[in-house]
Structure formats: structure tokens, C-alpha cells
Image (cartoon, rainbow, N blue to C red; front, side, top):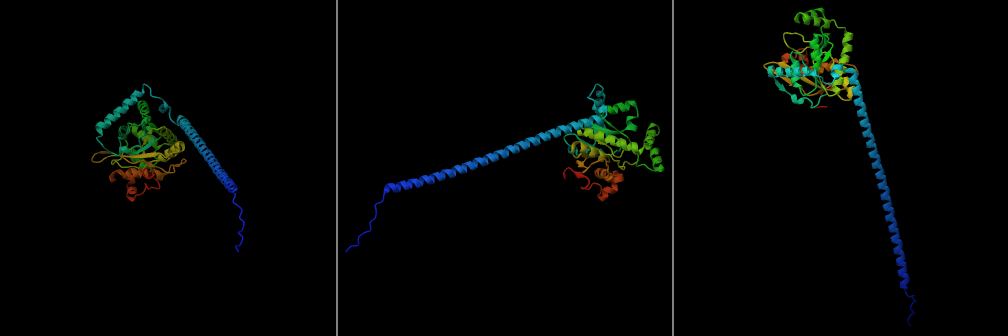
Length: 358
């Protein structure tokens, strides 16, 4: 006898389908809610990123405004410094009498071109724009050479006050028209009575010798004060983009052999004033001029006095640059700096830094 089959109720396909639809609806809702949540998070992140971008742009605009303000303030400071420390004749715009100065410039350049058939090396090392200090030796005849060499710049050559500007009214007037700067001379390196007598014996008699005697009598305190005034004038002109040229040896020594004499200070003071005024290191261009088999002008690469600050005019800074200048000449012209060049001292990288290494 067969065992009765267990009763299995019929499947209600309608209810099963409804359950599947309901489960599918729940899954779709969860999926949509998840997608919505993801999109909302993306939108929030984009808002946050956009806010960050806006903040960065605002900060950059603020920095730009600050830079422009600082530049404007610095330019104003430079102008005020210029007005205070530059002689009035160098501040005036060109006038009718300036023609005389222009003619003198052309005359110097013409004489320079006729007389100085010189070999010139390194002229391309001059910066394209002004605002640099030229340092050269004082063997005689450098003024026309400098005028010819730097004719493309607004040049100011330092010249002795006692022996040049005060030599005659006409000479002083002409030097002003040429844009030169008076320097209160010093002969502090000539110390003993014997050295002073020897120097005066070499100087041509008359007013020239009298001028040297007056310089020997200059008060050291006055020399120091006037050196600071000269440094400020030079720094103000340099900050305006002009070029200043100076001969650290000072007055012509009237030696039989033309050799470098010990240099006086001044470069460190100018560099320090320029740094305070502009916030930049001053470019110093050494130019060696001498006549051996032919007349030669050598232009060196730009140098800097790193860390120039305050009113300290260090002798080692002067010696460093002068030794570098001496190294650009044949040995017989190096004079006071001959041994320093031979020892390789004076222009160490720790003291003088070339533009190629800065």
C-alpha cells in the first residue's frame, strides 16, 4: 500500500513576484541613496577645494599688493635719499649750458679714439643696465678712457676736490658739467716726514705741489666725514641706475715706474649704503688699464662684497678687489699687490664673490 504523499500547497506566483519587486525596490533605493551621498560628498569636496583656491588667490593678490606697496615705498625712500645726498648740480635736468658738457664728452671720446689705439678685452662683461661701480687703477689718462669705454651709460667719475674741482673756477664748472663727483682727498698712506718730502719732491712745483701739501694737511676726522658723504652720493646715483667710477689709489703718485699703489677705502662704504638703500648687493666691475707693448684695457667680471653692512669699510675688502685688479695686469704693474697676487690671497671666494659663483 502506497504511503500517502505529503501535501504541498501550491506556489502563489503572484506573491513571490511581489516579494521580488519589493526587494528590488529596496535595493534600487539604497543604491540611489548611496549614489546621492557620493555626489553630495563630491560637491562638498569641490566646494572646499574652490574655497581653498579662492583663499590662495586672495593671499597671492595680497602678497602682490604688498610687493607693489613695498616697491613703491622703496622707490620713495630712494628718491628722498637722492634729494638729500646728491649735489644740486647732479639733480638738475639738462640746460643750455649742458651743451658744453656734451661737447667735452665728445672731445674726450675723440681724443681717446685717436690717441688710444688700445686693445680692449671683456667689454661685454659690463651689465646691460647701469647701477654698478667701476674700479680702476690710476696710472694717468684713465678719464678719457673711461668716458669712451662707458659712453653708453650715465657716468660719474670721482675726481679730487682740492686738486681738480678747486683748481680753477672754470675747471670746477666743467667737471660739474661732466657729471663728476668731488672726493675729499687723503694721503693717509704717506705717514713719515721722509715719505711726505719724497712725494712733494716728485710733484711738479707751483700750484700742483701746493695742492698736495694742503691734502697732506687734511684733518683725518674731516676725511672720514667727507668719505661718508661721498659714499652716500655715489650710492644714491647708483640706486638711480647711473654708473660711478673711482680710482682707489687716490692721488697720482708721480712714481717713475707706473705700479699699483695701496688702495684707500670707500668701496665698502658705497656697497653698504647701496645695500641699505636697494636691498641688493652692489656690482663692482674691475677695469685694468696699462701700456706695455700696447695700450690695453681689461674689463673683469662683476664682483660683490658679500655681507657689506653698517659703516665699516674693511681694509680686506679693498685689498681683495685691488688684488683682483692687479691680477688682471702683467706682474711689473702690480706694485703693492704683487705679493698678494703671487700668494693667491686677497680675492678669496669667502671675501669676493664673482657673479658666476653667486
